[in-house]
Length: 214
Image (tube, rainbow, N blue to C red; front, side):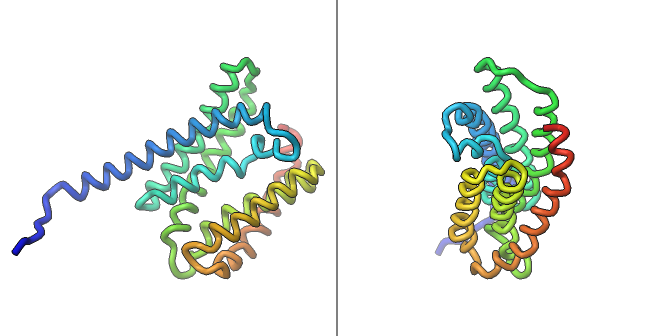
């Protein structure tokens, strides 16, 4: 016969290793996607250029790393780290490529990352683990941010029909893929009835401010 004996310190060590792995992934993906965005801005043709100049693509990374986290606090921290390092990766790369930097723009994106990173890190974790009433919320947040930018940023504000269609198409693709797992699609749709109107209303409320600082 063999018996299983818990070795003191092994479980905490594994949790620490898992946490460091997620944070390391957040750092690598954040820096890499931030740097890649700088290059994509100069090569993506219309109507795809908006993918390198919008919020929602940068919120995918914290969602992904949050989904890898074992706990909600780790997901929140990983999301924050990923978003902030995307800003670092982007502006360092842009500076090395000879583009001018705007302190106002840097501050705006850091604030966006500090707010959006933790939220979408948690959203990724909820997508993988949520049960009961919270099921569907994580993926609904991800889909809703793409819908919001499609409707408000590129539809209402900029009147870029092509870009709006691209972002809307990605939202639909996310809905029928991410939105169907791990729970039923109806759970995601239920939360979309809340998150999409809230996102659109919030963006419209901020629109005058965005026009001033933009």
